[in-house]
Image 1 (tube, helix red, strand yellow):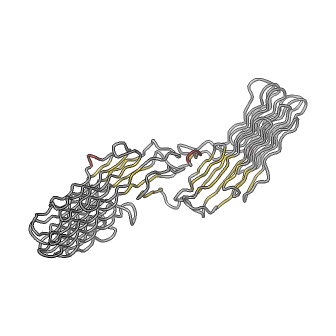
Image 2: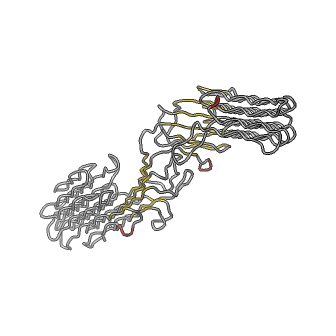
Length: 534
């Protein structure tokens, strides 16, 4: 299960991941350790608290405070999650010759107290208390004796960081860092309950260990600082890996559990619009990059999701992590719109103009003659498996051309006396003749229209899930002399070209291309949360 570590002292807001589950999660907090005194009393360790199966809404902003460790003679601050859902109390500060109390009295279904700081004894200072943890209370720091300064207590009933040894002078011995939550992946650890700092007779007391260890005391110098607390969030994702479908917006806050080593980002450009009347619009190109390592939690990279073009209008590009396509980490071109009143179909978004390690071109829209004929079918969108297929054209008859299938599918058939069949997509059969739409979820092209009939709509793709993939293109509208001709079929989501309108009196309208798409996929990892991101 992913672990998210919120470890920098201070207040912030944590954004709940989209794959959060309320049925299997834990929130654990350790309070800040107290600071030691210069008169011999050491600081207490922070408390540990835990709550399970917290109900949170994905995307919600949750306030938290990571308790700061206390400076000399200052108590450690409390660590809180969602204000009162979990509260772990900070350790008390050393006060004169007396050690501070371990943190206690917080909120949460389970809890363990921090270890108390050692006191002055035999004329020598005490060691700081260890922080509590999931396995037990923090151990108390040893008080000074006639033989020397006291050692710090270990964290988490001995399974956390060891306490620092007491010394007579010189370099102080800090408490060791805890390791109970150490990540096995590339970020986040070590983390656990820190040991208390050792006492120092003549110089500064030892600092507490990460996280929540109390500071050791001094007999003649400055008391050691306590260490800040931590929040550890563990949950079982509802889906694995995590997938974001970006269909709108312009900025993507990188999730807290982002994995720079296991991720993919894929883009499909917007489809071009069909001509009024005229050829079909071109399909959007596809690009992909794997393991983008320049992003870290807290970044907010810009992106653009391409818009499908209206009749005669080119679809816009889709890209991620940049100010435009050329400056992005990955991006793909939109399909070219067919010119209104001309017969030539629009070109597909070119792979050569995209950015990425895997790139494919969208299909080209079908071309028609200038006599009263059916419109051209749009070009299918490119996808993970290959280029989008071309739309069917028309040279002399009234049936519109079929829309091209998506993602290594088949081309739309040329129109004849009846509309041409739509091409097959990666998920199945395209639409037949007589303006039938492509079958939903297949990425198939729509069938061409006949005489006054509108071309069939392209089908939505399903390569990524049941409703997200490379779209099949719209079929061309039917042509007719002396009457209203059929309009083109709409390009399927995502990225397919729209069908061209048939010629007539008046002519049919070219259809809009399918919208573009950005898909971000990654395997969640244990991670250290960057508080400044929200």
